[in-house]
Image (cartoon, rainbow, N blue to C red; front, side, top):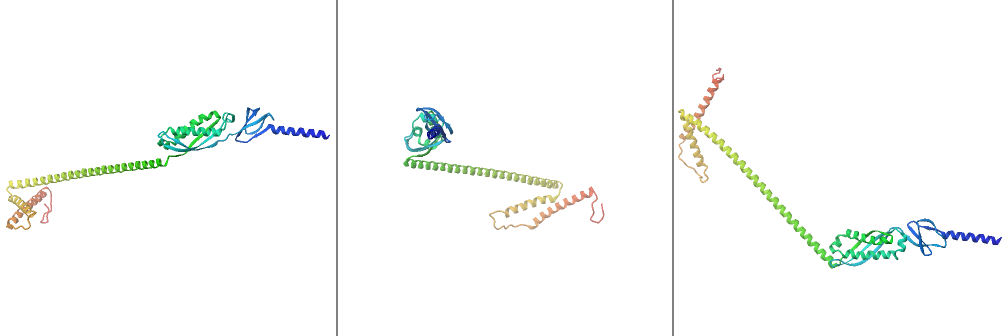
Length: 323
């Protein structure tokens, strides 16, 4: 009985050992390769998996998550013979665990060396100015080249970024002086453009001012001419009326002309700028007589107008009756 118990216990232990050897658990984010007598047979996915105990064994445990590879700083000679130091970072992900495990030895080191050599190649084919201004173009070119080369290893390079590009100190100082000179040049150009625009606006303003002034002079001349024309018409009308009165034998009309000329002559003498004191033997009676003639002409004109009104209708008479 005791011997049978030992046999059963031994069988149970063997079964447990077999189950433990044949059942494999793979964590999430990993893939395991299975080897049988040293030859790859299958890939175990995350979860519970069964293999042949004591014949199959786990070969490589591959991380299937996206990983980061730090690219150390290295010296690069650009196309225009400038020495710069550059470093970067690469992101990659294993897509095929078997190829990543058996196609290359030392996956991370191989990918690092591939990235560093391509950084030197790409940066060395560009000038320093392009190197500093076309960071996105450099990243795209590196990603394309490295991803195509690493595809045979069953990995996908998702991103490559250049972190720092450091030129020598003397080149940085020279670039600073060049930038300052360019900014000074642009500032001078802007100042010159501003002065030019100001001169143009000033000239335009003076032009408009001259135009408006000419318009004003033309309007004033037009108004003066119109005033002179009206004055001449009034003078001609007055002359015609006086001439008609003279033709009818009216002596007061002659006195009107004489008095008008007389007063104009006195006005011209009195308003002369070089005369301070005016002493003339003026006969007051003649001037009064002339003015009296003018008054007689006006009185006769008003009397004639009153007679015409009485003849045209009934007008109140000065005696109190109606006519």
